Image (cartoon, rainbow, N blue to C red; front, side, top):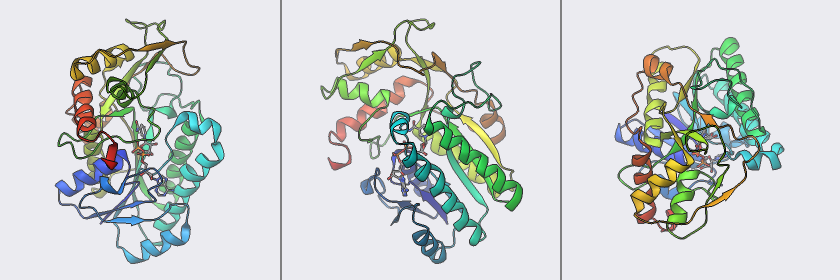
Length: 326
Ligand SMILES: NC(=O)c1ccc[n+]([C@@H]2O[C@H](COP(=O)([O-])OP(=O)(O)OC[C@H]3O[C@@H](n4cnc5c(N)ncnc54)[C@H](O)[C@@H]3O)[C@@H](O)[C@H]2O)c1
């Protein structure tokens, strides 16, 4: 039985969908602070908060878990600069609660949602796993701290883990049942699509970067490809594999302008786009070197064209104009 913490969120719900499709027993744990019960059709939900050790203890006493997956975090870089205390509590202390519950119950397999933010401003692209780690935000600091905590728990207690460093997660399940529903939404693709739908405006921050069209380039990785990588990480741990870290990205960069153009093509709507100066701390290019995940885990992402990601996100938005409340 797999425990999916943060299973009602964007990426966790796609993970639960894949586990359902594969017939793998699992339960989701979520406090629903930022997740959606409707995103878990067919997956049992334990409503609990990882910051509550007593709740964790009773859940671990009742269920015989084999592997724990951790998606449950605060995710916004900007929010982390305003509320670092909340981020350290939820993204680090709550993970420590979880690892301690695992230790008390003799569990030793953990899959962690890490991020490209652990690298900070890249010294070179594409970025391999051994690139220097210099996070530039409290969010990135909390994620790197958990990676280090997991290293210590592995060395000393034999609690093995896989850290998956996602680049820009995007898209939604091609069946159109699940989608991205953050509030407020800060990710580029859904924001651009909301602008196409006449429900918000989008600004390009900086058009003078050293890139072909002057706008920032990012590596977009489809949420279903992320879920596939997590399943491979579970297999790695079940096969006795060691603690390790892997980048997850498509390996191809798309500029902000290219994403906007793809959105105009997919939606057939020519919506207005604003411009603004560069934002502090936005690197020109962030592209993953995911060779290690491909060769060692056997990961083979299916949706590497940003247009397909935009299409899936648009399909979901059309069928769910008010998100999960539709
Ligand atoms: N979305 C991205 O592009 C991206 C990129 C890199 C890394 N990540 C990481 O992936 C993970 C999932 O991201 P997401 O986009 O699905 O986020 P999300 O906000 O959609 O999902 C997080 C879920 O965790 C739950 N949660 C948060 N704190 C909790 C707590 N204390 N107890 C119980 N439940 C709690 C929320 O209610 C929510 O359902 C995060 O750890 C994030 O840092 C995301």
